[in-house]
Image 1 (tube, rainbow, N blue to C red):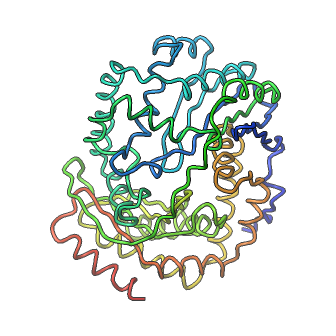
Image 2: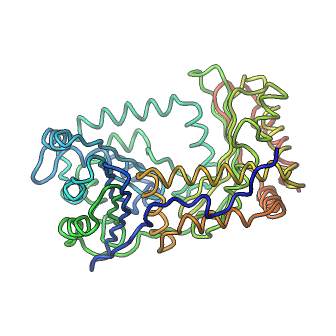
Image 3: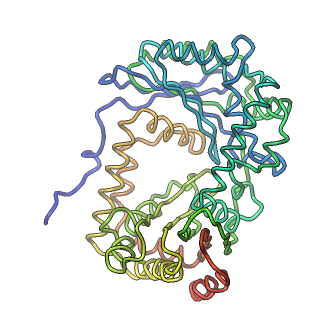
Length: 437
């Protein structure tokens, strides 16, 4: 089947490009009018994630994310919830390795109000002691659920095996001991240290009045101290093996990781390589592991790119007796791609990446997050056409070269679930030939 050539212009949405206004204190206001929508998403992004936390405060940002909704100088928890729900607002927040974000989505006409509401949450949170004790139990339940998730545990083990004691290797959720001991003074100090003007982006997309949003941002965030950029030294890849037996699952779960360039490198090769190897049912990873060998039900590949580090990841879940075969086959597939990428796989992967980015650009929340992270790291928002052209320019040789770089760095491997005895020695035998070249 001959498909028409994909071009950057074919993947560029007709919506207006994001605009950026910078307040005197360094707060950036990111706006994008999407007139075909009636709703709007308003978010506040803070360059404060788990990589910005000292080891003894690991997980504190995630606690802050929960606690800002529990009370401010002018509103208690019930009023915060009621005022949002009276406007029909969808409220959300998340903490990641490189940032924390708070979101409100509702009618476009209410976007300036959302800015003021978020400003109150982010800047005026009081972290009431009684609310902290109550929410602590919720956080501990979330932590327990995360610990019982075998695949999530594998990812945490992989991070530590790959990056050691660097903050990039510590989990966003922190530790049980930390969650149990954080005080309201700890939370307030964290916000005061990291939530400064140059580390905050107020973002809005949808049916918005740009001038009104900028004015609201200036009113809500204009008095925030400018501060200095929250920068962290790059993570240095070490590479290692990790395993943990878990009885909560009857399966084994494996995650393989290789270091790739961080976001500042603005390099799309790893993203395209991940799609070549393991995106979709026709990818070599799924074709080999599921369709030909029937070793797995699920396997996937991704390029997880952050500010201070990034990782090419292969993940799979399988019956315990297939663990060694799955890891071995995955490594053989990486080697095969290093020798050459099939033209059909390259075209499939290119289309998948371009269409996925187009879909993200059509979602206000994803559009804003991508643009905000660009601003934090690159100091600009990359147009979608530019990002599409970058992927279009990568040929089979460039992608094969990326796989060779992965092999040169060597894999880290983490396995959890029903892994059995001697699993690390078995993994070492599989990995050593790769590390030896």
